[in-house]
Length: 280
Image (tube, rainbow, N blue to C red; front, side, top):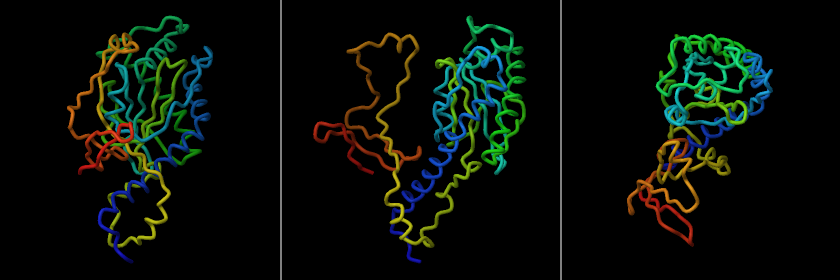
Protein backbone atom coordinates (compact mmCIF):
# COMPACT_ATOMS: atom_id res chain seq x y z
CA UNK A 1 0.00 0.00 0.00
CA UNK A 2 1.05 3.59 -0.47
CA UNK A 3 2.32 5.54 2.52
CA UNK A 4 0.20 8.29 4.01
CA UNK A 5 1.17 11.81 3.08
CA UNK A 6 3.31 13.53 5.76
CA UNK A 7 1.25 15.03 8.58
CA UNK A 8 -1.92 12.99 7.98
CA UNK A 9 -1.40 10.34 10.66
CA UNK A 10 -2.48 12.64 13.51
CA UNK A 11 -5.80 13.79 12.00
CA UNK A 12 -6.60 10.20 10.99
CA UNK A 13 -6.07 9.00 14.56
CA UNK A 14 -8.27 11.81 15.90
CA UNK A 15 -11.02 10.91 13.44
CA UNK A 16 -10.96 7.20 14.26
CA UNK A 17 -10.67 7.63 18.00
CA UNK A 18 -13.20 10.46 18.09
CA UNK A 19 -15.72 8.30 16.26
CA UNK A 20 -15.22 5.54 18.84
CA UNK A 21 -15.77 8.00 21.70
CA UNK A 22 -18.99 9.24 20.12
CA UNK A 23 -20.25 5.65 19.78
CA UNK A 24 -19.43 4.94 23.45
CA UNK A 25 -21.22 8.11 24.57
CA UNK A 26 -24.24 7.14 22.48
CA UNK A 27 -24.38 3.77 24.26
CA UNK A 28 -24.57 5.52 27.63
CA UNK A 29 -27.32 7.76 26.31
CA UNK A 30 -29.25 4.69 25.12
CA UNK A 31 -28.85 2.90 28.46
CA UNK A 32 -29.34 5.98 30.66
CA UNK A 33 -32.84 4.99 31.81
CA UNK A 34 -31.67 1.53 32.93
CA UNK A 35 -28.66 3.03 34.69
CA UNK A 36 -30.84 5.61 36.45
CA UNK A 37 -33.20 2.82 37.56
CA UNK A 38 -30.23 0.93 38.97
CA UNK A 39 -29.18 4.03 40.92
CA UNK A 40 -32.70 4.40 42.36
CA UNK A 41 -32.59 0.76 43.40
CA UNK A 42 -29.30 1.35 45.22
CA UNK A 43 -30.53 4.65 46.73
CA UNK A 44 -34.20 3.92 47.54
CA UNK A 45 -34.66 7.07 49.62
CA UNK A 46 -34.29 9.15 46.44
CA UNK A 47 -37.23 7.26 44.90
CA UNK A 48 -39.33 7.79 48.02
CA UNK A 49 -38.68 11.54 47.79
CA UNK A 50 -39.32 11.58 44.02
CA UNK A 51 -35.82 12.93 43.40
CA UNK A 52 -35.17 12.59 39.64
CA UNK A 53 -31.96 11.02 38.35
CA UNK A 54 -31.15 12.22 34.84
CA UNK A 55 -28.18 11.70 32.54
CA UNK A 56 -26.48 15.09 32.18
CA UNK A 57 -23.83 14.15 29.65
CA UNK A 58 -21.49 11.41 28.53
CA UNK A 59 -18.24 12.45 26.90
CA UNK A 60 -14.46 12.12 26.96
CA UNK A 61 -12.74 14.43 29.43
CA UNK A 62 -9.38 14.49 31.23
CA UNK A 63 -9.86 13.12 34.75
CA UNK A 64 -7.90 16.00 36.27
CA UNK A 65 -10.21 18.51 34.58
CA UNK A 66 -13.27 16.64 35.85
CA UNK A 67 -12.03 16.60 39.44
CA UNK A 68 -11.04 20.26 39.37
CA UNK A 69 -14.55 21.22 38.24
CA UNK A 70 -16.32 19.58 41.21
CA UNK A 71 -17.38 21.23 44.44
CA UNK A 72 -15.52 19.82 47.43
CA UNK A 73 -15.66 17.52 49.26
CA UNK A 74 -15.77 14.72 46.73
CA UNK A 75 -15.66 10.96 47.20
CA UNK A 76 -13.99 8.59 44.77
CA UNK A 77 -14.47 4.85 44.72
CA UNK A 78 -11.86 3.26 42.48
CA UNK A 79 -13.03 0.52 40.13
CA UNK A 80 -11.41 -2.20 38.08
CA UNK A 81 -13.03 -2.32 34.67
CA UNK A 82 -13.00 -5.22 32.21
CA UNK A 83 -12.30 -5.80 29.39
CA UNK A 84 -8.78 -4.56 29.83
CA UNK A 85 -8.43 -4.72 33.63
CA UNK A 86 -8.11 -0.93 33.53
CA UNK A 87 -8.85 1.58 36.32
CA UNK A 88 -12.17 3.43 36.48
CA UNK A 89 -14.01 5.27 39.22
CA UNK A 90 -17.35 6.22 40.75
CA UNK A 91 -17.28 9.89 41.80
CA UNK A 92 -19.74 11.87 43.95
CA UNK A 93 -19.56 15.64 44.37
CA UNK A 94 -20.48 17.57 47.53
CA UNK A 95 -24.17 17.83 46.66
CA UNK A 96 -24.53 14.12 45.98
CA UNK A 97 -22.69 13.31 49.22
CA UNK A 98 -25.09 15.49 51.22
CA UNK A 99 -28.09 13.78 49.62
CA UNK A 100 -26.73 10.31 50.28
CA UNK A 101 -25.73 11.00 53.89
CA UNK A 102 -29.10 12.58 54.63
CA UNK A 103 -30.94 9.60 53.15
CA UNK A 104 -28.81 6.97 54.86
CA UNK A 105 -29.30 8.70 58.21
CA UNK A 106 -33.08 8.82 57.77
CA UNK A 107 -33.47 12.49 56.90
CA UNK A 108 -36.37 13.85 54.89
CA UNK A 109 -34.28 15.82 52.42
CA UNK A 110 -35.45 19.21 53.67
CA UNK A 111 -32.26 20.10 55.53
CA UNK A 112 -29.18 18.51 54.03
CA UNK A 113 -26.14 18.11 56.28
CA UNK A 114 -23.40 20.73 55.78
CA UNK A 115 -20.07 19.28 54.71
CA UNK A 116 -16.55 20.60 55.11
CA UNK A 117 -14.66 21.31 51.89
CA UNK A 118 -11.58 19.81 53.55
CA UNK A 119 -13.14 16.34 53.52
CA UNK A 120 -15.60 13.96 55.16
CA UNK A 121 -15.35 12.76 58.73
CA UNK A 122 -14.39 9.14 59.42
CA UNK A 123 -18.03 8.09 60.15
CA UNK A 124 -19.21 9.87 57.00
CA UNK A 125 -16.51 8.11 54.97
CA UNK A 126 -17.64 4.75 56.31
CA UNK A 127 -21.33 5.41 55.50
CA UNK A 128 -20.59 6.59 51.97
CA UNK A 129 -18.24 3.68 51.24
CA UNK A 130 -20.85 1.16 52.39
CA UNK A 131 -23.59 2.83 50.32
CA UNK A 132 -21.44 2.91 47.19
CA UNK A 133 -20.98 -0.85 47.39
CA UNK A 134 -24.67 -1.15 46.53
CA UNK A 135 -24.33 1.35 43.69
CA UNK A 136 -21.43 -0.56 42.15
CA UNK A 137 -23.41 -3.82 42.29
CA UNK A 138 -26.62 -2.33 40.85
CA UNK A 139 -24.93 -0.36 38.08
CA UNK A 140 -22.57 -3.27 37.38
CA UNK A 141 -25.50 -5.55 36.56
CA UNK A 142 -26.70 -3.13 33.87
CA UNK A 143 -23.23 -2.58 32.43
CA UNK A 144 -22.54 -6.31 32.20
CA UNK A 145 -25.89 -7.32 30.71
CA UNK A 146 -26.25 -4.40 28.29
CA UNK A 147 -22.68 -3.44 27.40
CA UNK A 148 -20.52 -6.43 28.32
CA UNK A 149 -18.51 -4.29 30.75
CA UNK A 150 -17.68 -5.69 34.18
CA UNK A 151 -16.85 -3.43 37.14
CA UNK A 152 -15.77 -4.21 40.68
CA UNK A 153 -14.41 -2.15 43.53
CA UNK A 154 -10.67 -1.76 43.75
CA UNK A 155 -8.83 -1.23 47.03
CA UNK A 156 -10.36 1.16 49.58
CA UNK A 157 -9.95 4.82 48.74
CA UNK A 158 -10.53 8.18 50.39
CA UNK A 159 -12.51 11.11 49.08
CA UNK A 160 -9.47 13.07 47.88
CA UNK A 161 -7.58 10.24 46.16
CA UNK A 162 -6.87 10.41 42.46
CA UNK A 163 -9.14 8.69 39.94
CA UNK A 164 -6.44 8.00 37.40
CA UNK A 165 -4.69 10.09 34.78
CA UNK A 166 -5.37 11.02 31.19
CA UNK A 167 -8.57 11.02 29.16
CA UNK A 168 -11.54 8.91 30.24
CA UNK A 169 -15.16 8.60 29.20
CA UNK A 170 -17.39 10.03 31.91
CA UNK A 171 -21.11 9.37 32.32
CA UNK A 172 -22.55 12.09 34.60
CA UNK A 173 -25.95 11.86 36.30
CA UNK A 174 -27.64 14.84 37.95
CA UNK A 175 -29.57 14.14 41.16
CA UNK A 176 -32.65 16.27 41.67
CA UNK A 177 -32.77 19.88 40.46
CA UNK A 178 -28.96 19.99 40.13
CA UNK A 179 -28.59 19.08 43.82
CA UNK A 180 -25.57 16.94 43.10
CA UNK A 181 -23.78 14.83 40.53
CA UNK A 182 -22.77 11.18 40.41
CA UNK A 183 -20.24 10.25 37.74
CA UNK A 184 -19.08 6.94 36.29
CA UNK A 185 -15.53 7.15 34.93
CA UNK A 186 -14.44 4.52 32.39
CA UNK A 187 -11.17 3.92 30.55
CA UNK A 188 -11.65 4.31 26.82
CA UNK A 189 -10.26 0.87 26.05
CA UNK A 190 -12.93 -0.88 28.14
CA UNK A 191 -15.60 0.66 25.90
CA UNK A 192 -13.96 -0.41 22.66
CA UNK A 193 -12.29 2.94 21.94
CA UNK A 194 -8.82 2.07 20.70
CA UNK A 195 -5.95 4.49 21.05
CA UNK A 196 -5.24 4.35 17.35
CA UNK A 197 -2.54 7.00 17.66
CA UNK A 198 -0.42 4.37 19.40
CA UNK A 199 -0.82 1.78 16.64
CA UNK A 200 -1.31 3.74 13.43
CA UNK A 201 1.55 3.19 11.02
CA UNK A 202 1.85 5.60 8.13
CA UNK A 203 3.66 3.00 6.06
CA UNK A 204 0.93 0.37 5.95
CA UNK A 205 -2.32 2.34 5.63
CA UNK A 206 -4.02 2.97 2.36
CA UNK A 207 -4.67 6.68 1.64
CA UNK A 208 -8.18 5.61 0.64
CA UNK A 209 -8.90 5.32 4.36
CA UNK A 210 -8.36 9.06 4.66
CA UNK A 211 -10.74 9.76 1.78
CA UNK A 212 -13.39 7.58 3.45
CA UNK A 213 -13.05 9.70 6.58
CA UNK A 214 -13.35 13.04 4.80
CA UNK A 215 -16.86 13.51 6.20
CA UNK A 216 -16.00 12.68 9.83
CA UNK A 217 -16.30 15.74 12.07
CA UNK A 218 -13.44 16.54 14.45
CA UNK A 219 -14.26 19.00 17.20
CA UNK A 220 -11.56 21.62 17.64
CA UNK A 221 -11.28 23.65 20.85
CA UNK A 222 -9.56 27.04 20.78
CA UNK A 223 -8.60 27.74 24.36
CA UNK A 224 -8.28 31.46 25.02
CA UNK A 225 -8.22 31.14 28.81
CA UNK A 226 -9.66 29.39 31.85
CA UNK A 227 -10.81 31.39 34.85
CA UNK A 228 -11.22 30.55 38.53
CA UNK A 229 -13.68 32.54 40.62
CA UNK A 230 -14.85 32.15 44.18
CA UNK A 231 -18.51 31.26 44.59
CA UNK A 232 -19.11 34.73 46.01
CA UNK A 233 -17.44 36.33 43.03
CA UNK A 234 -19.55 34.25 40.64
CA UNK A 235 -22.81 35.11 42.40
CA UNK A 236 -21.96 38.83 42.33
CA UNK A 237 -21.38 38.97 38.57
CA UNK A 238 -23.80 41.30 36.80
CA UNK A 239 -24.47 42.64 33.34
CA UNK A 240 -21.70 45.03 32.34
CA UNK A 241 -18.95 43.39 34.37
CA UNK A 242 -15.77 42.41 32.56
CA UNK A 243 -13.89 39.17 33.03
CA UNK A 244 -10.19 39.77 32.30
CA UNK A 245 -8.48 36.89 30.53
CA UNK A 246 -4.92 36.03 31.47
CA UNK A 247 -3.78 36.14 27.83
CA UNK A 248 -1.51 39.03 26.81
CA UNK A 249 -2.28 40.73 23.50
CA UNK A 250 -0.22 38.99 20.83
CA UNK A 251 0.20 35.78 22.85
CA UNK A 252 -0.41 32.41 21.24
CA UNK A 253 -3.26 30.10 22.23
CA UNK A 254 -3.81 26.35 21.88
CA UNK A 255 -5.97 24.63 19.28
CA UNK A 256 -6.86 21.15 20.56
CA UNK A 257 -8.67 18.03 19.42
CA UNK A 258 -9.58 15.37 21.98
CA UNK A 259 -7.50 17.33 24.53
CA UNK A 260 -4.36 17.06 22.40
CA UNK A 261 -2.69 20.22 21.16
CA UNK A 262 -2.60 20.25 17.35
CA UNK A 263 -1.57 23.83 16.70
CA UNK A 264 -0.64 27.13 18.29
CA UNK A 265 -2.21 30.32 16.98
CA UNK A 266 -2.61 34.05 17.52
CA UNK A 267 -6.04 35.61 18.22
CA UNK A 268 -7.18 38.01 15.52
CA UNK A 269 -10.44 39.08 13.84
CA UNK A 270 -11.94 38.18 10.46
CA UNK A 271 -15.08 39.87 9.19
CA UNK A 272 -15.98 41.21 12.61
CA UNK A 273 -15.57 37.82 14.30
CA UNK A 274 -12.90 36.54 16.64
CA UNK A 275 -10.52 34.18 14.83
CA UNK A 276 -7.19 32.44 15.33
CA UNK A 277 -4.30 32.53 12.87
CA UNK A 278 -2.47 29.20 12.89
CA UNK A 279 1.25 29.74 13.45
CA UNK A 280 2.75 26.43 14.53
